Image (tube, rainbow, N blue to C red; front, side, top):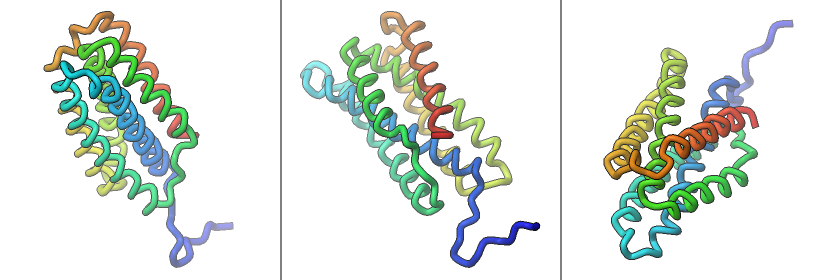
Length: 185
């Protein structure tokens, strides 16, 4: 039996596109939580006003990304990740812990997360070529903004963080695991 075309008003969903939107939505949600955790620490320390301002600016960018994916989730009928409560706690906790370790560690966290996201968005962009130009445009634009966040973190001393190599390796492993989980769950 041949599948019939969608009925009027039905949305034809590509499962891989849905995975992309779900995981990107989850990632932007997690990024907002990381920055909130960092600001929860730095906003209370007068000498950390510069770091709090920079982190606040990056959080605003992530909020805009999240709004875009909120819209795509709704428009395209994609189920968000069921892991959002876990990512909320894990993201905020990661942000707060790295901020408590100091500005350089907080920036190392940003560098590590953004490096993984930059690679992730790059792979998605290639996969979306000729498949979904609207989503490809969003992914490409956000990738450029994530690269800018990573560069800011490096300029602010991320690579001078105590235990930089171990810290960033652990964060990257966690991010890659969250990506795999959020695509499916």
